[in-house]
Length: 385
Length: 229
Image (cartoon, rainbow over all chains, first blue to last red; front, top):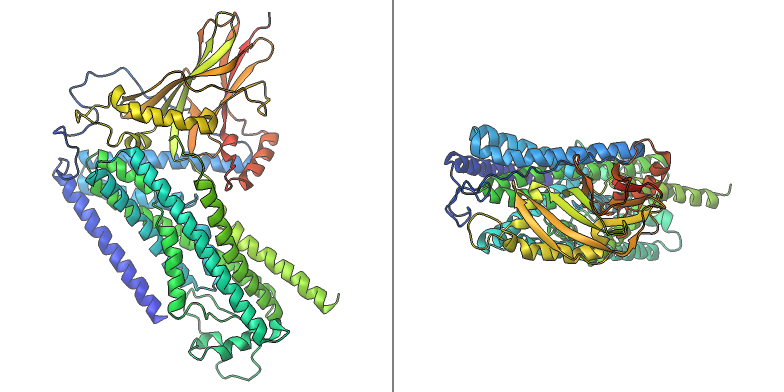
């Protein structure tokens, strides 16, 4: 537990520090009131847009009719879509404001807005909600680990986006088409990796189950947890020992729960301790994180065209913080529903085993299925826009 | 109930609960648009007052524009000319083919039978006021007679990656030689429609698959009516 706490603290501090740095950098950038030489457009013009040499045009961009879908669901979706568009527009304005208004206030506003955008944006597909939720449920992870995984994955997605735009757009002056093509390829890689991770998880779960079955003889449902205990001498989760299947009376027959920790009732959290599980966690995080967040790429490129790339970087990390919170919340919900399923069994060993096995196999299979479906879909024709 | 039977029913319940938990909750996600496009269309008529095709002008949002034109100011003069944007226009139009040009022309409400469209005969991109507009003309394979039944045109992205909406002003115009008594209007989805809502719940559950049709619920329709002779 202490280890995890430290990891969270370190992560949070690192993230906060990084954000401060980035915000500081973008403010410093804004104060100079001119685009940074390294990142600005090659021309001497202050901005490639609305170039003063051009005669003013009579064109007014048309406004579209609001998007509306029928039904109760539809009303909700329409509202979310409308919010999404409004926020995106505000985000664009937030970047532009950095050049005009008080830079500090504008930067704080942009970071706050990006954070909110991230929270909402993560509800959409592509931020690892399903993968991470399935993983934590299948592998009996603690809420704490679910949160850590969500945050690392989001941070990685943000870094991928920054690296992609940084290298392609700034260093190579690649076109938007090239950036898009790279994004699509990274998406395919991510989905392929997710499918592989799912396959790996499913295989290890099946092997584990089969071993238990072997050790327990013909009746796995009864003997399962015991096999678990005998099998692993390094097992030291004392707070997980209070189980109704324990036949020896114990003094410490109560749970010690750290705040927010999920109680593992029957199948102990073997998989979460030891280097093996960290390897799995890293695999999950990497498979999700290798795909850059699409919202982040848009903000980064837009900020770049405004000559304020660092504002885009700040916005990206603030956004990642927001998506991490949503993903972590959903993973926690998934763990909660698993707990609920366990509680409904009123402590029955067979019931708990059923829930445990269903979670382990179902969760892993879901990751495999999800990754494979998305991978197949990502190989389809390239989108025009 | 035998103990075995009890175990099995519990298994099923456990499976259902976990499925609801791990699938249902996190999957209350929905496809959402990343690109916004405002549609202005011109319905083209030939001398015989038949519809031969449609001219599209799609204006994109500022974010997408920034992304799309990145690196295309090849001469570095700070202006995106038609020539500089030509490669982008070509990529857009070429890949639109795989998506049926997001344009679905049919008679009346019959959106099961869309009339085939030919590849655009002309296309170009303009850049103005920090947004780009894609112009292209889509010919129908066979001209349509709008006098028997109204002609409808939906413009939408089934996967809802792009959110298409008709312009508030002058969304649809008639061009060429429309017959007497022809008019064009835009129909937005009716938020109260029971039937559409049912279709939506189907779309909702299929949104993740490659054949997602989530965007159809937001589809806006241009309607061309001509008085019968």
